[in-house]
Structure formats: structure tokens, C-alpha cells
Image (tube, rainbow, N blue to C red; front, side, top):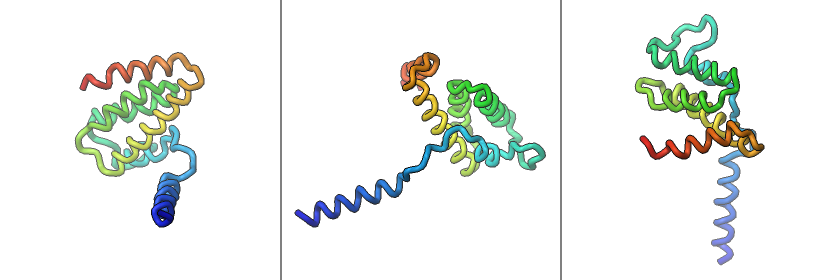
Length: 127
């Protein structure tokens, strides 16, 4: 029985260490911009007009603090064919940061954030 408790304690410790204690990524767009080569003068910017438009829409939405719009454009971008692994990871990380920020705003009573989350819940089964 003692060995079992020790083993469970080790698993719990490993889980805590793997998840980390740092802050969530937030809406820092540096990784996203780097993955899609969006910095001024960068070579290798997306050639696909749909990808380029979604990237630009995401950045504009984040700049305007329009988190629901940013989530929408990131969600569309996430399911776009032809992204590199780095781009997929950057999209997923930024989307997670936006979700956390939106949930935090809703938790603090932001009516627009609460409404956006309610809309997402209603629309989640429509795919």
C-alpha cells in the first residue's frame, strides 16, 4: 500500500512538472508572425491569399482587442490545408492564449466576452 501511494505521488509530481507553473502564452504574436514570416521585409510570406488574409485579420483583431474575431480567424486558419508544423503550433498557441484571455474577461464580467462564449457554445455543435 505504501508503494502505491509513493507511486501516485511521483505521477502527480511529474504531472505538475510537465504542465509548468508559468503564465499562459497570452496574445503575444511574435511566434505567430515568425512562423508565417509576417515581419516587415521577411522573405517567405504566405503565398496563399486565404492564409495571408486570415493572418492579417487575426493580427488586426488582436490589435483592436476584438478577441472573438481573432478566435474566428484563428479557428479558420487552424483547419487550412498546407500549413507547416511550426505554423500549426503557432496558430494553436495563439488560439489558446486568446481563449484564456477571453475567459478571463468573461470571468471579470465583460459582457461582450460572456456573449462571445455563449455564442461559441451554441455554435460548437454545428460542424
